[in-house]
Length: 495
Image (cartoon, rainbow, N blue to C red; front, top):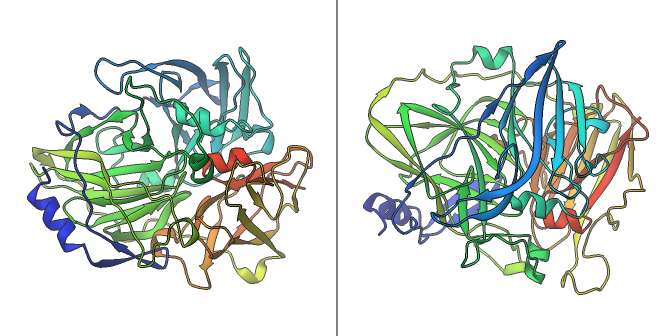
């Protein structure tokens, strides 16, 4: 039964317009119900891995492996993970540190492990060119050169990324620096600083989560109707402080999440993909496309539970695939937060978090245009189903050549019938505008994923620094993993 608080919240927002990314959407009343029996499972917190020192290099040993996971009591679901049966540890690194990730493959099939959001040499990126064969170990070694941020890692094998992530191989990376050390934000891992890997899965009656693509999932991506957080079904978290910091990753294959609190209360966003916003931003609804991250601060009241929800979002002219179709996930609860009856007082949030170096469009030496394209009837055998600039991914073809040190503008044009989250490797970019309008405050920072809505043009700006290699490419692609696997991906080199 829906609680009175939740019922009033949904009723009060039934006709409310909310601005997301500069676009007004409507927040309709939704039938959000908790799983039968309520949120009954303690939230799993991924192990925190800080590595070990070997001659001044911080070393992390990671093993990709198969196993079984008990999402539902009494059922053993075949899964894959890193150093475990599902997901992987949270890796903590520091800006300026020399690190080495030793990746061993015990899957019995090839895979890769990509460091999503990290700025590093292309040969250490873990993309489709850095395949780790069964029984082998690949070492990715580099110096961390970026500000504090919540990043992540996942497989990136050509044609198999969607399946490998669906089975469970992903984890978070926390970068820290002197600036993050000095901020009075919650930072006690697993206590008031909590990683949340949000995903949705589909389970068979015997609780398998098989990866079987239909025509719809090839077109829209694999979308499930059962939410899991850190691999936990129907989770709750027992809070002991008046503020909790949630490091949220949309780790789904294809679903877009629209996050809110069931109380209707505001929360504060302090960071996006690539690190801190300049100042905290207060919101009551946060949209995260696949692979996007955000850090939010939630204020709690002793003894008063609050639930992080995915709410259903409709547009004023929702016309299905031909008229603004999207991959918004269905309404469901992700996590119930249960504050103790007595809470430790948290520090007040600072007015400023960081100082951004804003790139000047006048300094851009080149503007590149990328058309995100998609045919109806994907999988029917008629032509290329998804493409960028009319081209489907070819490992032997370099699509773009960039000069080291250059600042560029990339103009992303969605000429297809559904939104696409665009991701590029190597750099963090800044969003200049959406259809000529400034980005929302929640996107006004360093990013590596941006949702490009149907019919929209998004301009991003970035500077290519530190690493050049004419023979080792970085990727850019749609982060709906089934689109990436179908070829909605290109390659660039920095020279």
